[in-house]
Amino acid sequence: MRLERHQQPTLESSGKEQIDCAYRNGSDRMVIVRCCGPRQFFLERVVFPFEMLLFACPPESELEIWSHGLGGAELIEACRAADLQLERSTEPAEGALESAESVPWWAQAG
Image 1 (cartoon, rainbow, N blue to C red):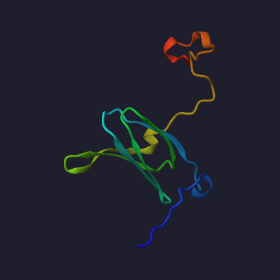
Image 2: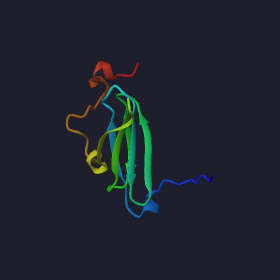
Image 3: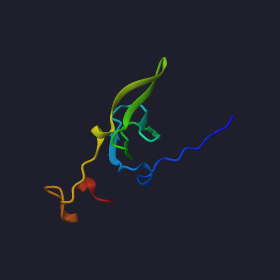
Image 4: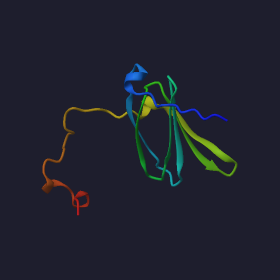
């Protein structure tokens, strides 16, 4: 049996830019996120309950969310990675906090 190593394509090797995406597991169960794309792109991660996964992938990629049920692995959801793309902004968000004094008490560091 021979094991092969596949390197994840980089921006230079893929020939196209990648998009930044985010997925948040809003369930109370651990899930497995699989992202498959062109040019042998593959990403698989375990995402714990209420955890957020940030990742980069080719825009044409498909995302699958898997969980474990009584009968084994279950496909919970499938979507396009482009639907999870993060927006990039060069301007500060409207109403952005400008000083540490205006930060709410629950967001301040110890």
